[in-house]
Image 1 (cartoon, rainbow, N blue to C red):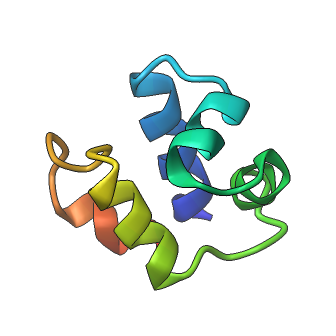
Image 2 (image 1 turned 90 degrees about the vertical axis):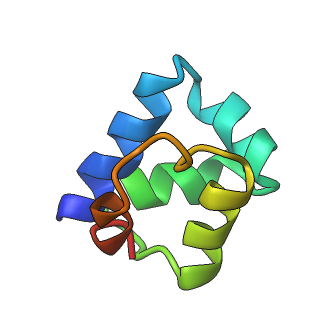
Image 3 (image 1 turned 120 degrees about the vertical axis):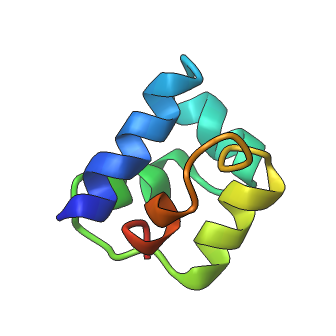
Length: 68
């Protein structure tokens, strides 16, 4: 799925481990890992957390469509 690839690209763009990004987003590492592995589909709340933590501020907004 495109959302899993984009989540990983965003994390790698900021040079963050899964644990660090999950911490910044206020979620468990397991949850973030499950999104990247396509085991779970992220919610709109997750997209909002990405935006609120300023992970999406410098990215093209079309990316958001592929996250949720």
